[in-house]
Length: 183
Image: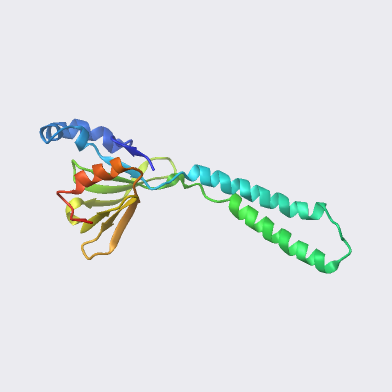
């Protein structure tokens, strides 16, 4: 999960120019920048590990037939066929695991007082998939590893992982006046 004080998307470049006067008058530009949280947690390393394991399973499926001790036993050959097919299918599944780099981002904007969830399309352009004002959020629970946002009826709206205590503190400061915080 990555945290940045400025949003890396197009709306982050517009916010300082349009809202700089309000942000400076309200307590500083640093506190008025959106907090952007990614939903991903080191998926590149996990994906690479799964692909290496998939290659090892495919090679072991082939290796079962290279080293034959008792080639004349038909029951053993039937078991070898079953195991090699299982290893091959599992290896192919592990090699084709999707890369999770296209995970959505949650942007908590203190200037507009809203939560935006953005997802990049095939061309890399961010698209808003959820936009909620802080006033329409029923409540929030900040734990050590995540923030849970709830609807007015108490159902879970979204859960976003937090990577550090600094992100938790910054998010608590942003939400404290607008959203009911649960302990």
